[in-house]
Length: 114
Image (cartoon, rainbow, N blue to C red; front, side, top):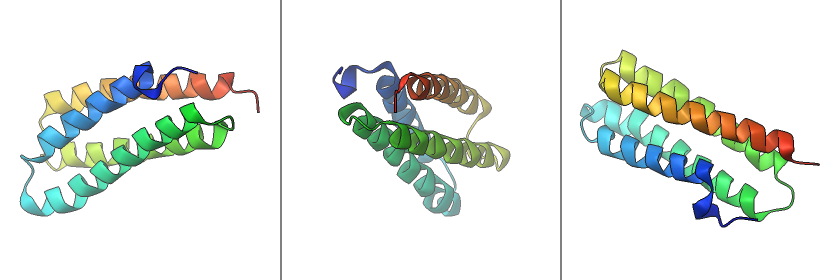
């Protein structure tokens, strides 16, 4: 078992968190405290589920929870872009990271023997 901070999926997730936290400062106030905060909570839950899955023997449910967190983040991020709260380049960069996270979580889930 690798330490959680050496996992590629954890590193990309952490980069995504930093990017979203930095870009949420530029949102309009009412969106920052609704969409922005909800997205931050889901991001923290995502990285927490990745950590927990890495440290437990029963991983499948935690990985499935992480994938669910990722889909909620994907929806919220798309809403932010459609409402013109984040620029297109941030949206595209975040989507690339989310796609990588999704692929890694899917492969990790398939490799679990439960």
